[in-house]
Length: 201
Image (tube, rainbow, N blue to C red; front, top):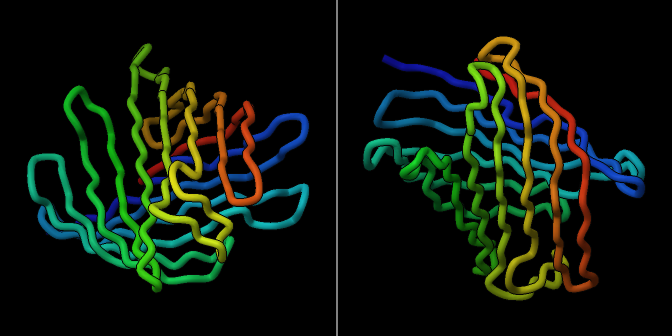
């Protein structure tokens, strides 16, 4: 049998006194227990400046290789900050102690390597109230002048989101994020308030 699952993991406002962003993290898959087609998109939009800071779409073939683990391969179309195509290789699944892991290597058209690792955990405070710690790392193997990317950790994000499941499929949340960004031009770090909602079907 074939199944489908759509999840908007993050649809949120994130900001502080000098920054206002709309962010999204959406995934959709279609297939069975062994083989799936995944679509993933992630990015942010600055309402102040009227520009996208980062936006991409991944199309992946996913193959189950172990209990709760999938190997994924495909392509990414980056729309911002630069319009490029990257090859994608990654793993996604549930680590021991129920840590959700989403990892990927991106190989650019020029052979440069980027990486993204996301870790999250759902801590049930009650049947409806859930606290989610979340960490995301973006990395680069070398400087990329065209993208303004510096080798090493280019972005580190650590946050907490407290959501209330009105229904299992729909949950608004509040939270806080600490974000540190490193580029060829500057180094930035900030603490941001977060408000959004999560839904799936």
